[in-house]
Image (cartoon, rainbow, N blue to C red; front, side, top):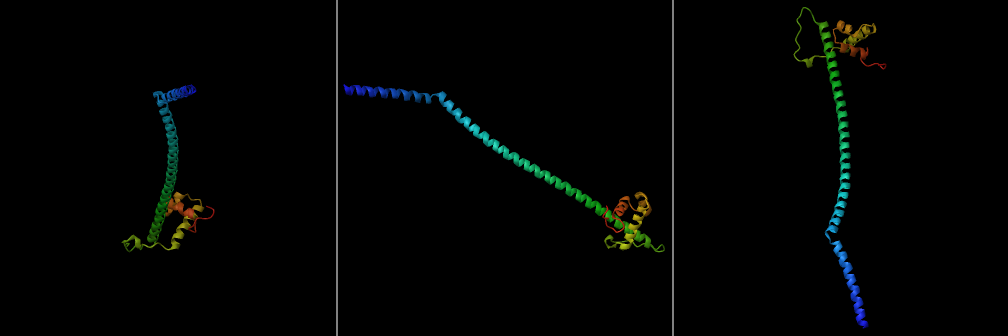
Length: 181
C-alpha cells in the first residue's frame, strides 16, 4: 500500500506539474501573446531606427552647415577677387590713359608746324616721354590744385580727364602717395 500511495502521490504531482506547464505553454503560444511579442520587437526596432536616423540627420545637417560655410567663404573670396580685379583694371586703364596723355603732350610740343606728323605704325614702339616731362605735368597739376583751382578746371586747362587730375593730385609732386594721405 505504501507503494500504491507513493505512486499515487507522484502521479498527482506530475499531473499538477503537467497542467501548470501546459497552461503556461498555451498562454505563451496564444495569438494575443504572439502579437504582443511582435509589437515589443517592432517597438524596439522602431526605437533603434529612430536613434540611427537622428544620428544620421545630425551628421547630414553638420555637413550641410560646413558646406554652406565653405560656399560663403568662397563667395567672399570671389567677391574680394572681383573687386581686386576691377580695381586693377581701373588702375591699368588710368595709368594707360595717363601714359597716352603724356605721350600726346610731348608729341604736341615737339611737332614741327612745317612738317606733317609721321604716323606711328606700331603703338608698342612708342616710347614714354622722359620722366621730367611727366613730372612737370604732375607739378603743374599739383601747383594749380594748391592755388585752389577746382579739379575739373585743371582738367580743362591741361586737357586731361578729371580722373587723371585727381590721380595726379593724390600722387603729389613726387609721383608717390605722401605719408599724410
